[in-house]
Length: 351
Image (tube, rainbow, N blue to C red; front, top):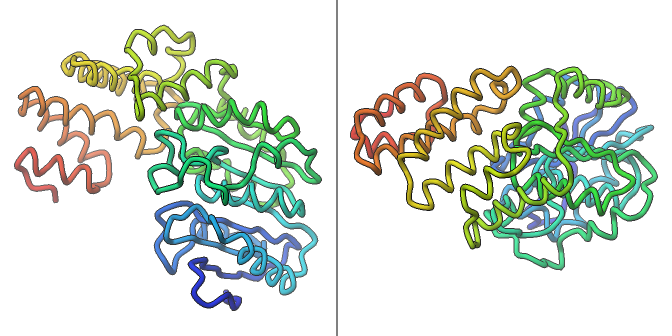
């Protein structure tokens, strides 16, 4: 791999990998990728594609880096001389892949979980300081309305409220794009990778993703209104007024959406019924484990149920059951900071 000189002082990081396929893939890193590393680098190292890996290690959503990205891209094109360019990214990287890809209009786009509005309540962008109405955020309403010169693939995990809200927006703003509504979470890219779908898509980028997704029954049959309501629920969880458990449970997609069920348990707790919330989480964990597709969802999402249940059991004074749930969780999932915090509350060693 080689580095391409950039502007002094820029927070943008970049690395170029030569290839032999005639395709240059611009891979925009997601959040929490440390300086010196690049998201999805190992995934694409097994391909014959030339790659330009980009990262904003300050988790700034690549805002203000438009000109620098274009300079690096033009330099990579000069070195690779590709027949085709692909813009590819997940979460924070999806916003950049979609924004830069549409502005340049020089190749297909694959964007997983891209937030179309900046800094909405409960969104990833808001958590990392993206402000609502930030003028440096891509104007996706305008960009999406124009017929693209190349295919645009938008992937959203409909078990995540923010992804659901953005999927509903995409239906209005991106009439010419291919919208993939997935029975997955915001980490849909990780999910599709674990099911061996991502490698099939990126091997040549000639396959239509739809048959691959259908082969694993990954499409979610949710309509625009239900997606929008789910998104509204999670925004109200962040900024109020809180949705009620009855509001959530009355959704017609409730039984088919474990994300709604998880939110229902959380609202039981927030409305003063932690015992019922803990019981609901236990039952949901059983349903997820028994479901052929749901049990393949990313570990980070599946861990939310025992993690929250342990905390609730501690809150209501049932430390014995909390310890049992924690021990089961520790045997199934990698130890991380939230689990270490719970271990300290339980007074046990986390190692």
